[in-house]
Length: 314
Image 1 (cartoon, rainbow, N blue to C red):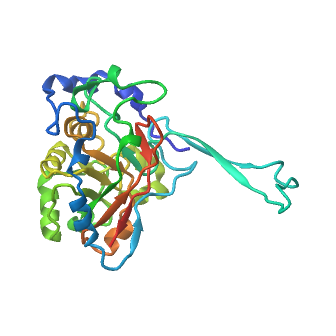
Image 2: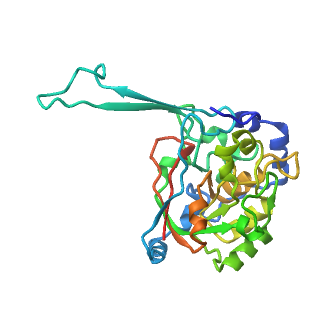
Image 3: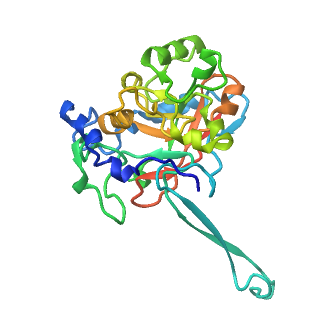
């Protein structure tokens, strides 16, 4: 397993440089209500699903999830192990008069690996999470008791891919390249794909190819949106923001004292979900037209994150 040579996320959650930002943040109830637990998923509606379904013209489907295995580049100490298990000894024993044979499998894995959905319990500010919820009110070693990904309804809505690499005329952005709010807006305008409330927005940087070509460099940094870009997306009323990078936001941050402030802006402050390591390459090869986005995540009780394979349909 290839791992990022930086402190684990558990350490980052208590690192002084990380929590120092909390003094600049005033917590207030979500616009969806003081008791809300779903965040921006409240922007979804049956009417939105019907409208998004009208975008399907050819029936072509795109798997947005990357293949995940033992060699998948993984953040921090995260790892993945899968084992096949044969019934009996795997060679002689059969079941019933029809001589049935079978295999099972089991996994020991982090759920924040490969293409992943970050839930609202994932990252906060000074141990306070979405809607002012304190860590002691949601964290249990056996699984979170609030904001768990198993409680989320399917996400079916309009999807937009912003081809930032294409906009810049490059195959791949470089680590540390900042994608600003102005650039996001410019790409959306150039493509003729204005962002609407309830959308899922995916940012294409070309960075995902590095996962197989140079895993160490892939994990050492990445291009991504900055806080202003995250604020702009929140103002558009999006449900989720994804990218073909391991963390969606620019890393290292131009302000080196800040660690993952975009995660804080999207998850903790606005209840907007994050989709990391989305495979957008084939999607942009076929153009940048909006699409039907479909995600039904596994419902593992108490999960903070989840390995997923979202689907785009055009």
